[in-house]
Length: 290
Image 1 (cartoon, helix red, strand yellow):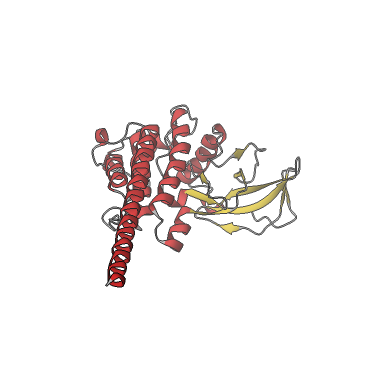
Image 2 (cartoon, rainbow, N blue to C red):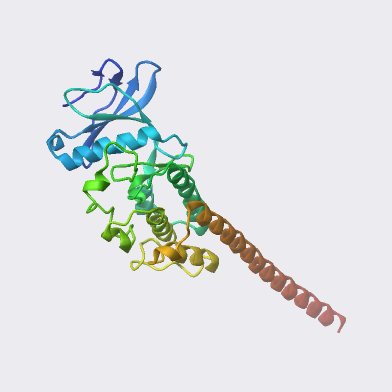
């Protein structure tokens, strides 16, 4: 179904933009008439209406999203069921995907990368506390807001043992995005460790400009930070962090050590300059006496 600016959907949402086409859906901006709140209407592309896997993923994403309420997770809103087509209602946020940011800047300073990773860990820690595992964390599924905060999106293949729609049960071949999931995911493994590995890869990419095997983390990144990343992306699940909170704690400690060492290097450099200055002044004084 095609919607145009001015159209009213199910007597609740007034469309205010032309659609933007995504992979499997069309995205519109709209106003919710009950409170004048701006929202996003995501409509499943009609060519997928008979594609069982895509329909299941679309419905499942909404079911998971409606269960979650966290400032760093995109918010889903309930809405009337439409008999003609499937759609979702989400909060409107102004920002770019982390992928778009990385395309623009290639990589971040280690401080900015760590700060971003801590925000992602905060959101995923909440998701895990609800018994849900994202399973498809990647820069495309993280929105960076104008104020620097983030929103996690897309729960199409997320694991939830209580979900009515569970694509992970019938479609374990859907393993996420190559490069961002660990080896055990290819065998159908589902655990918090999968998300932890993915966040580790995202942090690696923010630091280096590429995923492991595509780029190296620069030497100017403190070794403590590199150790944390190395543990997060260890190929053996048991060697990774056990939780997002453990990962975050290690990252904060490493960042503090990194800052301390950088301050020490600055002090050493400053002392050298002072030493040189004193030497020159003594030399000048000695010459003047002669």
